Image 1: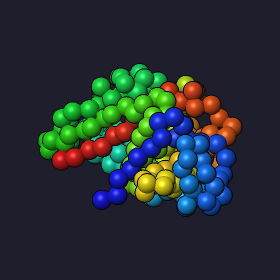
Image 2: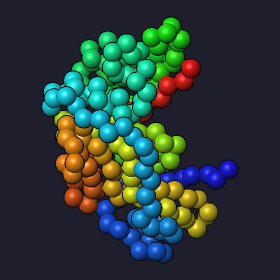
Image 3: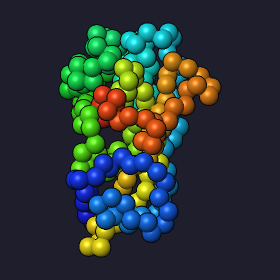
Image 4: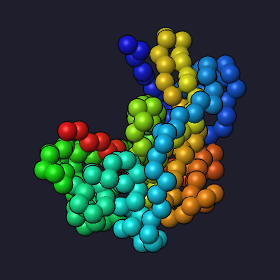
Length: 206
């Protein structure tokens, strides 16, 4: 299995598009620039209103991609998700994680983990890994919720054979809108990572 290591002294979400073979901060060499990953076939849902609670429910509906789990009538999370503060990922996670029941009585286990609010030594690996596993995330940025469904990144390596990822862009869905306004890009070259309040990783198992 390939081992992934990262440079703790450099931000893992970087600016600029780097050419093949160019050295990045920390001594990484870019060997596969501008790779892209997207979660396919997500539901094209739009929030009923711009109210943050409606945005949260619609975003969760897209992330789980299962109406029995969330968030319509008779779904497992119908009553729990609506009571969460839509701008607090920690509260959203606390409200929906754990054992829940589907409408037919079958139990499911929901995992909800808040990822770090600032770039850490493994954040790029986590984001790319989840997206490659076809798992979208919730992202809070500038006091609004988005669905994180894709990323543009470089694959990098070092002289000792270690490899990793360095992300340039995060591809987001704004469920308040349809059409071109729905697609939003967080670009590390022009946007402030400090205004990203966090990311929420969600999964469900029988």
